[in-house]
Image (cartoon, rainbow, N blue to C red; front, side, top):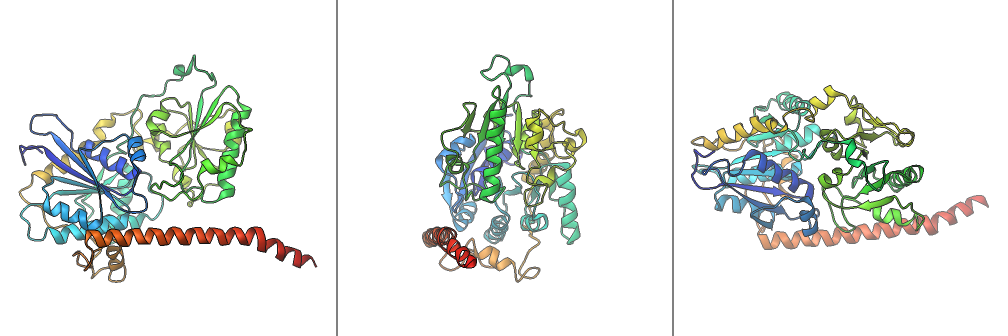
Length: 453
């Protein structure tokens, strides 16, 4: 990329949650290496899209990926900054609707410009739902990253299926895989000779109190059955913090119902997932991307079937992996054996040269950045192809159907509207919870008694 400029390569990453910041920033590191020669130094500027999941300082620290500068912005503010400031590469690490809004906003802002940055987007982890919807909302970026051969094939099929250009799809791998390969001997001499079992929970899977309490109870029971093992529940966020998905029922609150009678070898933990995996001898989850991180290190990994293998849980993605198992099987000492072919198709390169998996994407970005000029961004969705869908997607982020800022979508007004929406939404949510509790605790018993008369 040094042929384009002798000054540091400037990369902007726009993210809307802690997990997406992690993916976006690490993707930028993979695509634009820093310091390989005197002309390729990199400057990474972070932008956090203001919203319900904007990460806190604690969450950013836990992610462990720093930027040279970081600021919170609205969608309109970001587009104006990209039009005003000179960047070489932009990574959009956002939910699909936000990606689409930024693509149209940037296209409008750069209209008639002699040069523009390379725009890259992709997915944070496993793509197990809304494949067509999410992909078509991301169409129009110069590069759409697929985290595996399996995803790359599916992505291209979707684009070709609607007659859209599929050349933007580039196969790579998840950017946060890494860490030391698992060594069973490393646990020798630890406090718990039976090893450490890490249960990686998820904010929204499962999505109800009964199932989440069940999984927590089984983790506690596993600790009781195996006093020689340490059982760690890896939490995603603290109560009140939001992540990529809303966590309505934090495990921290659910565990309080268990009282003080918890085994000494059971504990809750925060922290960077990579650091937690450094001490893991078995990773247990419903469908978290942490399973891929664990498999990449060759750590024994179990994807739970206790609640069924269902699309709503996401564990159907692991069909054929060899990792599906129940707590009963784990209690009995079972350790799943992953299928090597499945691992290869999913971009889990435990036995391969992981760093080379980004070569194609790195070369594509460098080639585009060195081009004399790039054509305008060309999303599949336009006011012509999706007149009943696109305007609503763009309006949510302050843009007209043609990508221009909506009247009154100034930074101050947009921030005030966003804040007001949060207040109203939180108030309505608390009111709904109160009404539900009242119905369950007061009204329902009366109705049952009346029915017995």
